[in-house]
Image 1: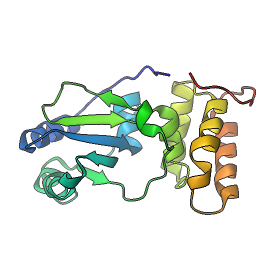
Image 2 (image 1 turned 180 degrees about the horizontal axis):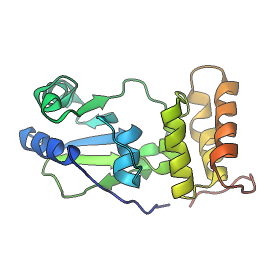
Image 3 (image 1 turned 90 degrees about the horizontal axis):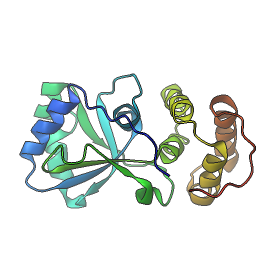
Image 4 (image 1 turned 135 degrees about the vertical axis):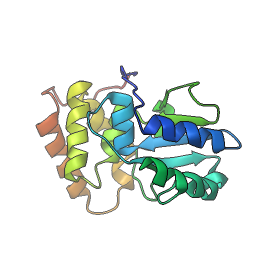
Length: 192
């Protein structure tokens, strides 16, 4: 299932990524989550000062990337934004199969991939702070996400991998569905 994305790379991110791209010696792929993914891919009207990613390919590039573009790096000080590897993230098992590339061919060495919106929503489940709930509400309403698909993906790909009491995550998901998703019959739906 593909969603209409409204990719928008605004300042200072555009300049930051262009300069980082020129400093990289080889192609690097980022699997992006968090606010940057929601803002850049789906048009959430807020700013973010970090680009969270869960996977870097090749993974042996982490130290160099942190030096070039991590918090406190010269690029970060210049543009007031930075790259951030999320050390612990809970995402659906098969998220990589559903990612979409942002800004293909815009950069020589940087490839940014964002999670499918259902996977982005579920990546926010464990933390569940106010900003996460705002992102979930935005994605659910803007993209008219289907609560049955979200619940099914949670049950099939995440529930058994979560840390902490399962009831907490179940209750958070139930609250999100009631609060942010349009009312649809909650039956098992086969994903397209």
